[in-house]
Length: 380
Image 1 (tube, rainbow, N blue to C red):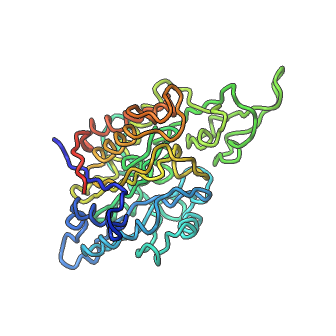
Image 2 (cartoon, helix red, strand yellow):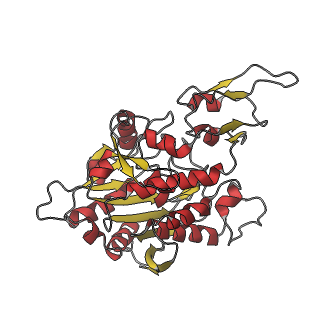
């Protein structure tokens, strides 16, 4: 079965053809109004979760709040009662609890006055508000989904499409999986297979970000200048933030097949996140500032490819497949080993991090029934 993925490029044909106007057209094309309108007359208790990512402090490539406001206005016009939301992070950060998370969101412009809706952290003040959702899949019998997502009658998932240290790339599927899970669910997805390799220079950046104090700088080894990081695996919760901050690439995983298993665990969580919402979820992917790192990083990398456009679909697998294909077809803006200059037509995320299994995300998601990789790209 072929599903539509609606696409708007970023060219401006006239002064009224703004990016906000394009978002409005995409929402109309994907049928957002029918998917988020109240299921019953009045609908006072029916609310719409608008899932976004507020960006880590120091990051500046997260989705622009005015784009979010346009989507919120579309939800309101359909009679929905939207709230903007995300979950607490697993690692030490400015979004680790709801208080700090809200302050970070407001600092980045995600205030009710700008986005036109309340901002609620979905898993509560200390990430303990969640429900177990049965999935009965390969890795999990059930998954933990933040309570606010379970309570919402419909969802709009807004994703900044970009690279990811463990998943290869992050789009709508990862936004569902990690983004709708509390800290306990993030632990489930990550695993605990961190390893320190010989390239470690003992800079200590990994020690600073570890939320469990599982990392330390050991004593200098014989015949080696300086110290190197050591890990206490009994304390490690597998958040992999140490992998993200290590500039030497000295931290990775020590389990065969872990990168593929990681993506599968994420997809099973994504499957759980949409249970009970058939026909009630809309996805928009923003292929702008397609960075090599997730917006969870406390910095922003140069763009991997030129800004490509905005996509909308009712199928998370289709929209991520289309996004993946568009990025791979675009010219690279940075040097990637093994590829000439501004070359096109290859898996850029695999070229960045050969150990990751980005394509496996969408293939496994299709296999478990989350959607289809067969799509038709329709320009609006």
